[in-house]
Length: 443
Image (cartoon, rainbow, N blue to C red; front, top):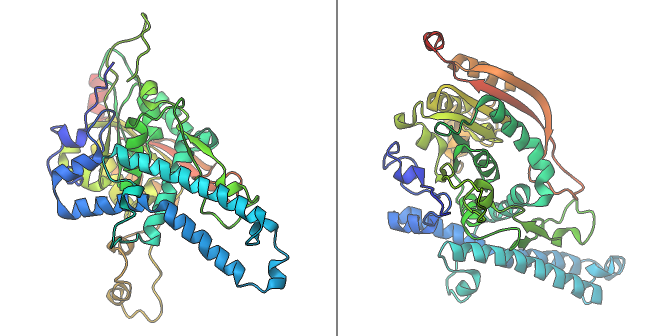
């Protein structure tokens, strides 16, 4: 059975040509690659940004090796009496040190092979093809941290090791949709949006339950990775081995922990969603619901009047606190839901855009902004608030809170073997857009 999936933000009449994706979307299964869509769009700035993302993937192994070189230089600078006290694998020139370097190089090659496969799937040059570039521009440390985040997100979403985290965060949301948004095979499937979809597992899990799902993601790093997992032929029978914590040097319990191997994916996403059949006579040959991934800013896309009252549900996982202004996110969510539609949320309130505090020597807010002019404008718009404040905003907007649980523990891309981990005490809630009383009486 062939995939029957469209890239909604490109082809759906409900989206105009200027929807915040700039017309570029990571399609669902079987769609044209994100790289091809970007280049067809021919926006020079967008193409340049896309290429910088690809280049950061190409540079992973080089950055990894240089980090080890720096660590070795610090060891070499120690007095010889101190060096002699170190474990043999840390003493340069020892057989143990050479063996460890072999393991580390194998791990960085595993990661680079995954990223090169991702790039090849996207139709872009791989790392080996760019080694001879005479004026190569090196990625920033911030950009390379996003490359590492992709590996950790893959471990969370698409490995057996990530099962515990997924149970903590995704299970409450999936169970909430089972209770509040029913799938009826006799009618069109409910439409669910997953904003901040990352590398796509929650969106796939919802699609496997019969919903029509669209994931939305702003990060091109994450979108390229999800596109490869969904469309690159990755299956448990043909997995990729990665070492997500290769660059970790602090809170490491055992010397072998950084280069340990994780296999991805643990399931075949196409088969789970019904896009792959196995030839059984009793198999349901009806087309599965549509599945797609939309690239771009959440408010820019779904704040459009064309999106009003078109969605049955929103699955928000570790997403609300990515808002520069959570009030704006909640207002967009309310407007885009159909009457009776639900926002199901799970996560903390980290507020990613929380800016530095004003100081006594900041004469005014404008003076403060001037001193921090190097920061993204969103740092000046972020409003931090406690959960009871967010709850009040939900009610003021018009939501009804039908379920609510606080203090639910959850990890996020945690290394299970690390000596340090952050456990969030999350809030889960189901907020419904009310159905007018006249409609209830008529029904």
